[in-house]
Length: 281
Image (cartoon, rainbow, N blue to C red; front, side, top):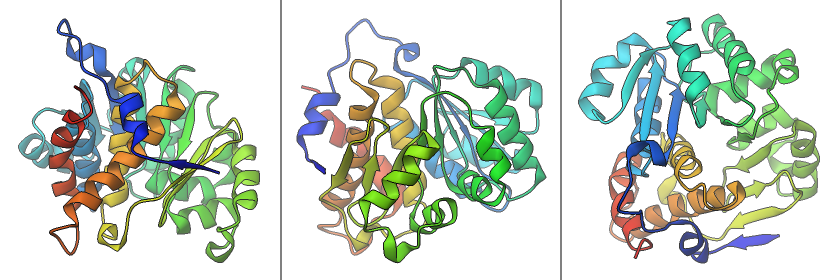
């Protein structure tokens, strides 16, 4: 078991070259947010933007358009029922997130099937939230998973549904790893001192974090940070960028918790650029 420490941020976060443009820092597509759970899309998108991604598009319900443009004008909007436009974005993205706040219905199933069919082999795919629930509910979807870099980001109940490992048994890394390897995906198991199960067989664990992070939207925020880090820090191995994102998420929250009883995900995202600046000298 490898323990993730602050050193990972020095390894990954770097000073940007003077001759830079937004295309250098990742084209990120988030497919997220139904009319009932638009906040998940907004928080994931905000975290992606605040973590330094260059071009960010949120494919969501049309009911979320005004909120997205108001709260995160840096991000582009796409109606996820516009199949032609969605395929175009899927084919050009460096990193795709699917799942936060989506509804459990036929529309989402069709989006997943389209995504799995159209995604490029080199595009990293982060599967979160409702998409994980649907993978567990409809095993046929698991057979359609694309052969691209896959990252699953379940909390413990989502992992129980998908892996059939009870939460009480998830403290056994061997059991988690056995299922993770069969899925041919990296798994970020979100819990106190989250664990990362890499495809090469190694396991990494956080040593920071706490109950001040137990707030709705915190997982969506982590997903956005991971997407941004994978999209922009191409100079390091994907596994290192992933570990840095997971560490930074908890590190910012831990610092904010020194003066707060709970840390709101929206506040966490707003502080990410300041935190990252410390490691870009």
